Image (cartoon, rainbow, N blue to C red; front, side, top):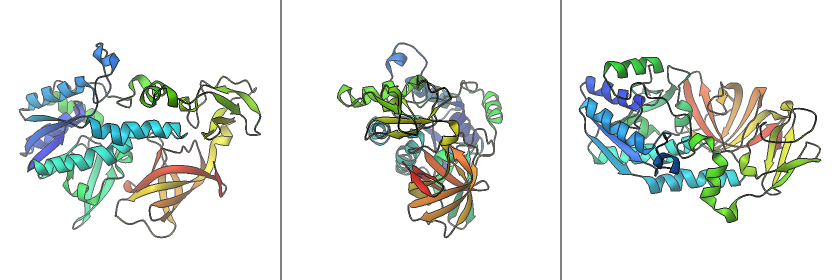
Length: 366
């Protein structure tokens, strides 16, 4: 087949391209330019993913593999669909997950359209996930073999049409095996470090990036920090500095460990409480997307992953179209509005959505 490989500049997408070429496919690399260099990167500091260094690394990897490489400018789309909603979500007291949004809104649909326009029969990426055809023309998304690198959480929104045309060559490999393949292929980036930061938030400086994006007139100001009884115990620096479950940086003296348990943007109030106050019995999710196209019917047992590094919790799912309620068998801490929740049955992705609010003993909280 003629296959377009989305090349990020890292070892994963480079090895994906190499494996497909070794299988006899006609392969070419394609890189999306998503953002401009940050001031730190322009000063020579190493960037996070999607940096100018990554564009060059993708080009060099393609040269090493002897395949063509193309770069196309998607900066406007990325800003509109990922960066701006990220800032607005924080201003609304939520904690967004831009990587899920990027895969849903920026990467797969535009990449598939470009692949078709260039005559490719398939699109491949370096994601650690698997696609299986369960019946003729019906596909399912599964976790990658390497649970520590599994990226199915970020991909729950992939459509049936996209799955029919997408290849994940690394789905059955571990990260160590991928690096070994890259070394065997003599790829120059085989030992390149993984990027852990959100690409447009270097070194985890969320508040600074949000302030630059929204401008000084919209930067959230200070406000009260209150305990669960409503007593003021301190002042915060602006709600965009905080997320549910945060402990550090609160600077309050209550005589016990306290965590952020609620964020109330309407009153600019931060609510703190003891660790047990973070535990909730369920959640409400919106804008859900279902792997089979239709929501599961009735009370459905699932394992629910409420953030990327969460190991999953046994729960009962009640799906109603694009909305869903989820009830945990055991209470879970730090259920955070704005994060994605993904539902699994075994290794198979059932669907996912955006956390709107927590449910505590059947009573909606915040």
